[in-house]
Image 1: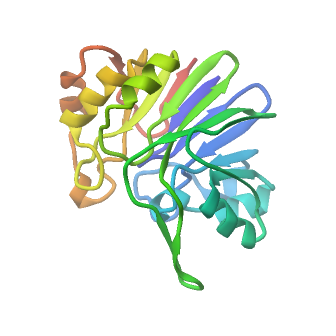
Image 2 (image 1 turned 30 degrees about the vertical axis):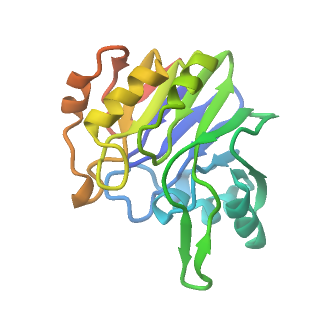
Length: 226
């Protein structure tokens, strides 16, 4: 499995036969190296409905036919736009052709703003556990630190975790470092920082605070092979 980071909370996973995008915020993301017209995902996984996470899902899925897996209310809305969606909820898991997806808790808000439809309720925000090829990846989504992260860590041998560090809207570096001690992954990558002025952070500060996992501060386009 090859996993790469593309600015903000955008993660790309490549397995032997599939390409999966998580939270594909490309247009308007000054940090990303991706271009919508070049991406042909087989699946898109969404943590919640905010526009900086849903991003270019509609355009990408219409062009590639990607299956979109999202919290059920968000999946319902995107399905009404003609996308092939699967709506799931917290604690639920399902094995797809491309891997197993399980939604976990995240403490945040979730709404999508559309010029056509106004503000749409997106259901509960989530983290995502993704399993394929014998590896487990955890994308925490947008969240504060919470005690049940310890349960997630104890129930899953997490090879790679992505955690937000931007503060203001999510955990900051100190809380995110404590979250890592609960999740107990082998490797952690900081995300959701430096995209906008309120979430400006130095990821090296986060790295110094973590003592129970390897911290890999990926540059945009950086790759980890699992």
